[in-house]
Image 1 (cartoon, rainbow, N blue to C red):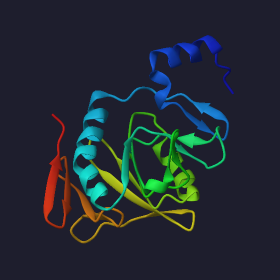
Image 2: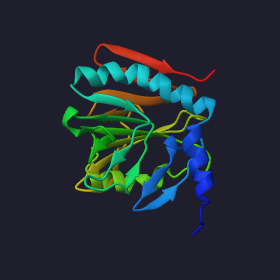
Image 3: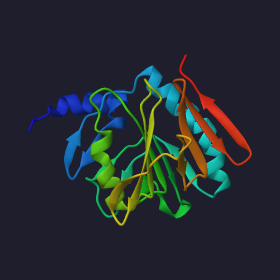
Length: 186
């Protein structure tokens, strides 16, 4: 295990770049700030699914901590989290959530987080590759990560949002009853 100089941790806190850091059962995971493409995809997703989530009575948060209830040293920071209002706390989201979105970055730990999310009771986990715009959807079923297969049309459907996700010509296409949107990267 690498020992981190307390001065480095203080500098990260002072500069505000520790907001992406995570604690995994008491072990600090220092995460690099997201790239412009990563932020673009996250922002576009927030703008599209935010109103849809609110219509379903969910709260939407961007880069907020999801905490194991009753602990201060076990949390992850997904790019987006959709939760029930009762799951909100001053420090972030307590316990499971309805849906978390992880946008991939080079060398990240998105897939390593999935079993933790499922064990916490997160209903769905969406993983997005901002380079290829390929999406994967997983469900937490009795604490186990279960991949959601695409339909015959190549669409992954979120039960939480009632939204279909598909990659079409390197753009992320979202469809729902009464609407659709495309997310592209400039």
